Image (tube, rainbow, N blue to C red; front, side, top):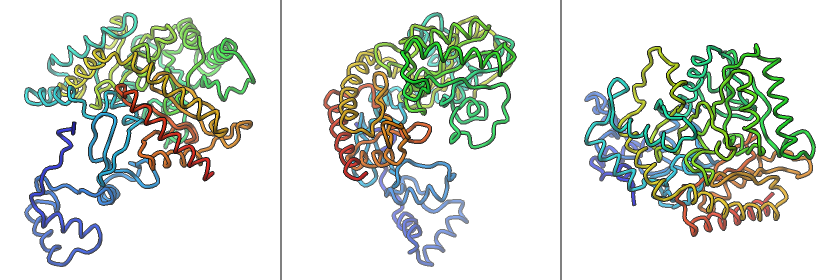
Length: 486
């Protein structure tokens, strides 16, 4: 199925379009320039006729350089412009198709343009498209109820927002209001977003483009077994080391009365770092002993992604006090959510509003997405397809010594690349080679890690057995190409 709102309309002003394309290549003639001046005098920009779309990837990239911030930086040495998508596949403007194993950074959880999600968006758009939180919205209530039915423990009250970053900010404010405290403990290697507060929580220098001006935030050790500087330690031993570090951070870098400890259940941008068994039980115990709350960031790991459970934190048998979600929650539509207990949610008594939070069209997409997730049993699918992918990655790791670590849960799997398996020197050079080699094979994957040295895979939760087999074949060929060239 082709996404209805991605279909190109027929050209309605061929002269304007040809002139625009000529200008991109420096071949426009004076008469065309005069025509564009006439367009401007009439209040119409060149190339703005109804249905007039630039249709070449190179042309679109040239226009992006002209009109977008430089920091809006695409992936790949030669950026890829996507024209359409359906299921696990996308097609570029030159007609080449790719198998998408990264799902828009784990966001198109049901694949691109799932029919049920598209239909829900279309139907709601004919009813009412925008309200804001000033008005009661049946779709927002329906979405919140559906979320309460799958959230762990007594998490039953939700605030809907537009993104994971905004949800993080709301979760922190809620924790501070509830506890009457201000200091927050995050983790090194963490990523929580791009606002000032979220960037201050983030433990990656490349993502902190300005010195932090936010006070009251400190960082504990990342639960990163592959790079733990403690020699060969068991999970139990690692957990106690991380526990002692958290206690020391609280007692030496805060006033001893923290508002909250926040952590991704699997550190996404960090390279799918999976904490050892018992980690979150111990961390929650510690933060609660100091009177603080535990905030679980499920932006990437939520909604069946890790297999077996709806949320990553459930693998550790821990119920957080506050949970943050986004990305795959609405099949690609912009939704962020903060869910808490009634007691904690009720702590926010001051005025607040979200203009676009709980947008009825986005809420309709979320309800449809969760409906499909239930019907397709995505938790089991992620477990099974994730095991299929993991077997292949383990095999690649055994064949290529520069794959230093293979890790992940469910359909959230990664390989960490190193120059030398003995020294574990990060290999961003090899990661870049593998990223591009996979694209040459028609496979889209992601990249992460502090040094850009981890390849991440997170395809649609509906990926089939045959499609996953295709992923593994293409990735194997890409690894062979890197092996031959390195």
